[in-house]
View 1 (cartoon, rainbow, N blue to C red):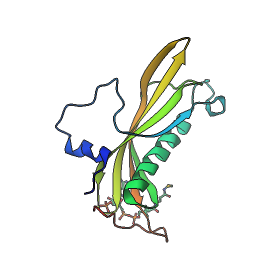
View 2: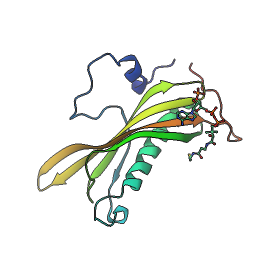
View 3: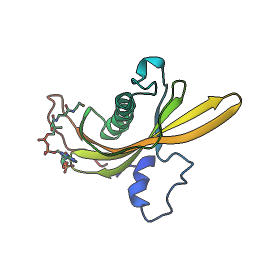
View 4: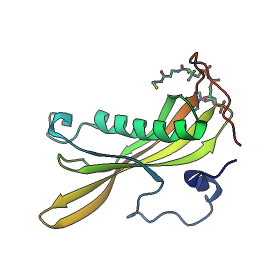
Length: 146
Ligand SMILES: CC(C)(COP(=O)(O)OP(=O)(O)OC[C@H]1O[C@@H](n2cnc3c(N)ncnc32)[C@H](O)[C@@H]1OP(=O)(O)O)[C@@H](O)C(=O)NCCC(=O)NCCS
């Protein structure tokens, strides 16, 4: 398998886990939580967060598979803390398993909260996103491991 920073996670499963205060995985996207993305409670809508994580996992999976991918499953989603308007959201992606046509990624969403000279970094959400590599016809295709 060709080198890829995030693939190391599967190989390193017996190594010590990442610190709970440090994002694990490769940074795939950063964006700003805007008022348009709020729910009726005034916090950021979970569906928006999930879609950012899906995009982040999809970018990483497509780069690895060198082509188009589709999300086939989203598992083990955990929403740890609310996201607030103004938070800077980062999604970090780890490829944990490469199959014949699919890739399993673990995506962590972290926020950087900047308030009056203080910076807080909080893991807000994580989950497993599975992608399938597709050919031009939208059919599954074998992922090259070279
Ligand atoms: C992706 C798609 C082409 C796969 O076709 P399929 O014939 O159902 O594929 P299979 O059942 O053979 O599964 C393909 C791979 O995905 C994996 N997979 C399928 N369902 C899965 C699930 N629920 N959880 C984990 N892996 C799953 C299989 O294990 C297989 O992996 P492998 O080849 O690495 O062993 C088809 O399911 C599809 O088009 N789904 C809709 C995708 C979509 O629209 N996503 C949302 C927008 S991106």
